[in-house]
Image (cartoon, rainbow, N blue to C red):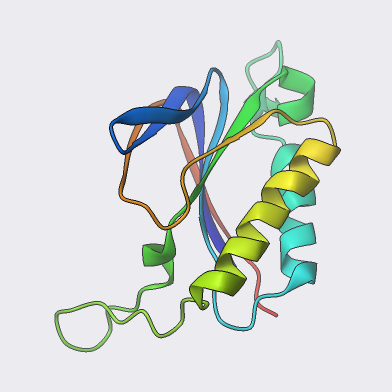
Length: 147
């Protein structure tokens, strides 16, 4: 599993001409589910992301979590993060999980975060989406966890 995590002032995702998810301050998470990923990776990401200390405290130091800052998460499935570019000129997506398994784990990450009290908005799985964001900082991290 792989994620690009961006601290944002606001973010939204549009699919089919409608806004399907939007948040105010918080984290935009672009999530790729890869072959071999399973429930332990979903649990790890759902627990880790809201508890990362990436929000400023009163002294301006990254010392507060999403929960402490009252932020939200916009979780967007992005299988292209599983793409490989080492050979040739066209990306290879053989590392991406099959759609059925990817959907299950993507939804599991969202539901686990919600169960812990985080407000989570999502994109539309396996649809063409337009993602807009205002990156705060900019602050961007990459999180990976292999089975």
